[in-house]
Length: 130
Image (cartoon, rainbow, N blue to C red; front, side, top):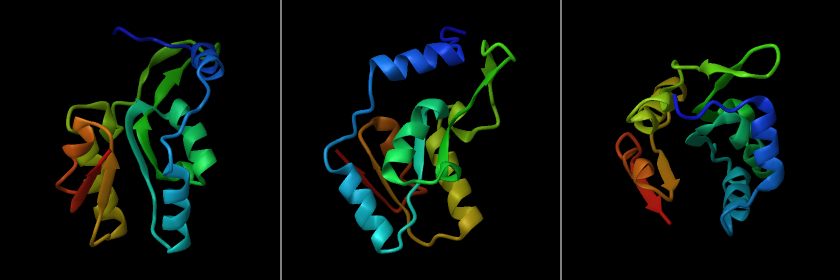
């Protein structure tokens, strides 16, 4: 295991590297919400670092699919939740399949900036890269 961040390490990282959204993403999510489109955040990153993004964008925390780090009572790293679909290779397609099956979506679009985002088509019906 290469990275074993404590809760304090993550808090320090977020303090030293404040949230920076991609230009226009806030307006995009707002427009999607206004038209009644559900928005999810699917990331190979850590849930604790994605939650502040979700908060700013108005995305419910239960619509985050990301890696959950586990800690002991002192806040020290103990591992990660291997049940999270994003904890393994091809995690984003797995997460999208779970979302589609659970909620019965007919159409799903993945928006992302990397190769692992593009891997999510299918099950996404379309991919928008930036």
